[in-house]
View 1 (cartoon, one colour):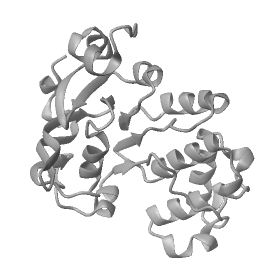
View 2 (cartoon, rainbow, N blue to C red; view 1 turned 90 degrees about the vertical axis):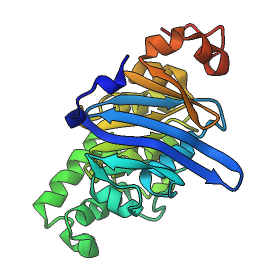
View 3 (cartoon, rainbow, N blue to C red; view 1 turned 180 degrees about the vertical axis):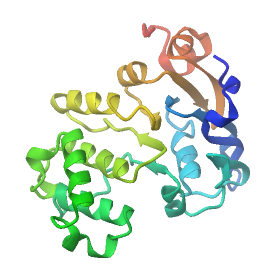
View 4 (cartoon, helix red, strand yellow; view 1 turned 60 degrees about the vertical axis):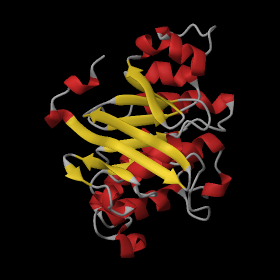
Length: 259
């Protein structure tokens, strides 16, 4: 699949020649990506391939040594993370970063209020602001959190915590959503609800998924990039990646039957 054939007007997130060095170690080695509008793109590779470093560069946690990052045509290479969020680039984390003492309803009210410019008074607008209340109800239903909306976060099952994290991300109205191992650590009995929710994310949001669970990757992604030693090994459709001898050797394994 020729990802470069996409119209530039369709590309919402791109990076060109992205390099990150830590002393003598090159963690990201001249990586170039183009993520079109509405993409369902997976970023895969063995441990140490540089996936999380790349996501940290895209989101502003790390500053690139070389290269450029563009969001909807704007150079964001040296913008702070919160500035990128305001422009529509939002991520979830491999490890939950939630407010343990708040409920899902309170957490979402705070996030939605902040997004609407009412962040300093979220506890006041909750119940009074129709916009905040409506958006919170919508997110709670979409992410299967309505029944637990008044429980403290630390009391929630782990799968519900992952769902809450995704709800927070979507409350920021992203153009691009980066999901960092959304099912990591989720017990088998809680995975199906989470997988269905990921599959039902809004079609107009471009989603980039980092995940080791190949069942999720192959059921979700329409395009894939394989990283090895910080560099792009190859990219294409899931079927092309499953059939690629190099990919099978370095990551999927010769016996993998995904197609």
